[in-house]
Image (cartoon, rainbow, N blue to C red; front, side, top):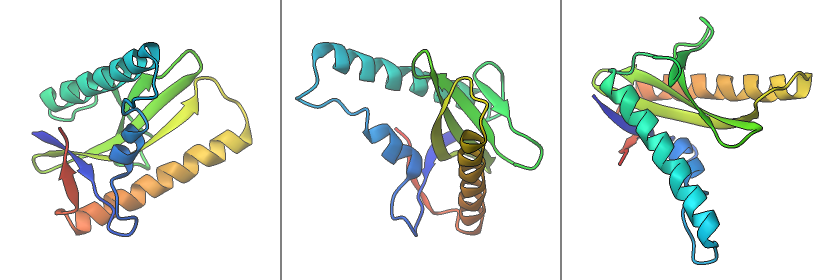
Length: 142
């Protein structure tokens, strides 16, 4: 198995890859900011490699199945004390397809946040269906 980024032909970019771009090290970053960005991406990469090693089968605490109405899984990564990064993926033939990503508060209990998350889950479902209909819509994950 290998991991790939879902490439959305309508948006003309890969949602997960685009999300990761915000953590690219820049010349303006302090050494502390650079170290934090590198560590975050390295830790997420290790989790993705673990998912590949397990053939995409959700294995807590790294990856989890979602509600039965969704046919994809998530990788969770703690960004900081209050925020969790959720990367949604599914298995398709020999690929782990990284579909979408969102940040959510670790503990939330309000309707606004629930609506935001549910909207992203529905968008992810659309991405999944688009990929299934056009399985060449991807870029290699490195």
